[in-house]
Amino acid sequence: MEKASQDSAKKTAGYRAADMVRPGMVIGLGTGSTVYYAMERLRERIAQGLACEGIPTSFQTALRAREYGIPLSTLDEYPEIDLAIDGADQVDPELRLIKGRGAAQTREKIVAEAAKTFVIVVDESKMVPFLNAPIPVEVLPFAATPVLLRLKAMGGEPVIREGQKKDGPVITDNGNFIIDCSFYRIDNPEEFERLISCIPGVIENGIFARYTKKTVIIAGSGKGCRILPSSDIVP
Image 1 (cartoon, rainbow, N blue to C red):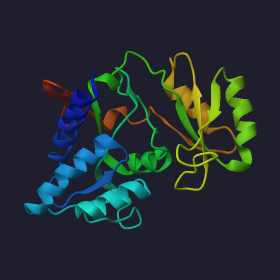
Image 2 (image 1 turned 135 degrees about the horizontal axis):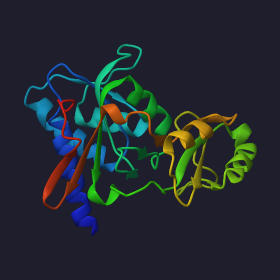
Image 3 (image 1 turned 120 degrees about the horizontal axis):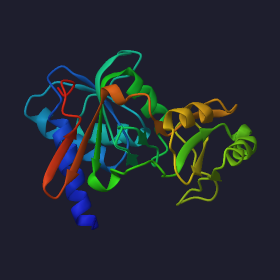
């Protein structure tokens, strides 16, 4: 998919997700370009009188929300929220995900856990027959080397993510490193999610396999968007 077409598909999906927000809702705001399209649409709806509050999953999202005039709150104020809008690196047919290209998967998973409905906005290129994208793993810097060894022992190819505009590792909003771990194919995402999270020093990983019953996928394309599953959980 060409970049212009991909951006158009992301915008279509993001706008559709924002249109699911009802007056008075508290919503989780994920991190990434597709979510920012949803926030762009929320800005329009707020200007038209929509009342809502957002809980950002990253410093960058909080900055964008303030720029757009989206009122912000915290999980201390709202430990249970109506829905979360987020993106994904890959989505499989069972609605299991790999997330974390923006290094925010820990806070994104916390917000997903708190949400009644988990809305994922992607372009069609992210819909895949099985998961095989690198899994982002947030790890304490103190534990980076032992975690690398454990991931290798699991058959993975782990590397510490390097910064693009600075020397050294990427540092998350929580002050930790990100390890990107590639596997040829992830046939049991639930088990992989559990095993990686059980490694001492791992804070969280980017497999989201536990939320399929409350997940709604909005996949944008040049022809509009499709929603999976077509069920009663779509507001």
